[in-house]
Image 1 (cartoon, one colour):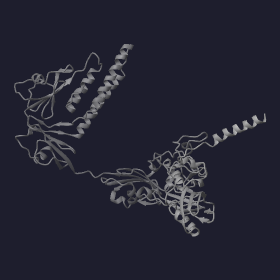
Image 2 (image 1 turned 120 degrees about the vertical axis):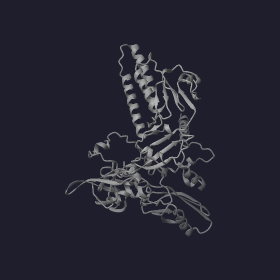
Image 3 (image 1 turned 45 degrees about the horizontal axis):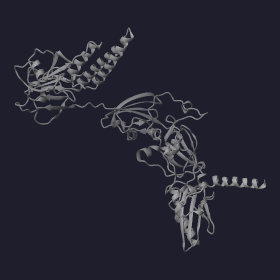
Image 4 (image 1 turned 90 degrees about the horizontal axis):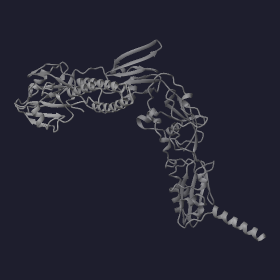
Length: 584
């Protein structure tokens, strides 16, 4: 019986040893160093483990904290910050620099180790000695800033750069072991520090980070600066009740400069209350709310941050002074010397109307294609300066493409499409069968309107009739089209083979359509559009065809399946006139 009890204890102990001490292969695994004494590993193995991101247990137990972004997820018991920071009610634009806290860079962080990192208490340092003396250990920087090595004694490493710690410790060891001893020193881990954020920030409190982290990192972890109350221009780093550094985020935005800091436990990032602020709108590259460095600033200083566009000529200023509200309108040059104060609203404006305009020429012409002319210039005035070759140019069919007309045509087509959609989508149905028909019809109309909205009108202005050209005023951006003389007739739309056909004085419209393969099954053969060389669109097939004309066969709407035949037909004709396009 005693033998059985002893055997049972032996079996249990054997199983426990297998579970707690698994057998490792002979090949090196960096994770082996995480749970064993580093003194049993070679320097190469420990260095390999360090590069693999595996640290000894005593190193891993220090300073672990989550750095993932919660993406505004509230934990149980937390209050939404919007309930704690009510808005002032005014519709302010965002402050200049608010996008600094829009990204997720606080989760894209390193381990805090870099050449400029300053050694602090609690840091872990690997030390290897081999040769005449063999020694390997991970030492911790104590509260006095020292590490202790047997036979060597304490070595002061606090505030030493990470790039210099190897040379410093090696020199101290070489003072004792002068010959036949090789030394390698490596900083393993950086100790996290606890930093407080105070003042007008979204979530003030205590945050963990690395000593080498930037002010932006800690501010982002706290949700950023309160845009209505906090200052982007006066952020103090407090240590022991005294300011050791001051940060102006405008300097960082403008020049990329931030003070070089190494944070310590207990440091406080104090965001000051927002200073005098000015709202900027209008013709500027940066239409934000700007914070003044002083209570009074000049328009010149504000212009450096807001960056007005080159076209700006005048500036409007609205604000309040001790004597009451005011509103001023001045030239941009006068604004440079104007004194600005808290609450002013600035509007940059382009109020110098150009006295010249650009006009383009296309088609059959000789010479330049762009002309800068006075605003009062008429068509005949400019045509006198455009040389042409009379043998190649159809000067009696000139027309103009005008942007303002194209915009108006687009607006009218969109209005017609909107009315069509409303009439189809709101059409009543008296039965389930009729409702199904209406649904199918609405689907077809929607596809039609989507295609129709993509068509851009040409904005044609018909200025010629029977060789007579109207002497109209030109507008900015006009394009004068001077057609070429041609012997061809273009046939397109709902024909089987759209193509160009040689003009025949004895041929009718039906002849030209027949030469293009005839009508398709969807063609509307009763009303055919004729686009003349001067841009005019006619629907009278009895008129004779002339050289340079375009025959456009429009599609026919199926009256059996479509309720809104009239509306769709009207839109098809509008598009044909405005864009010379036949749409199904």
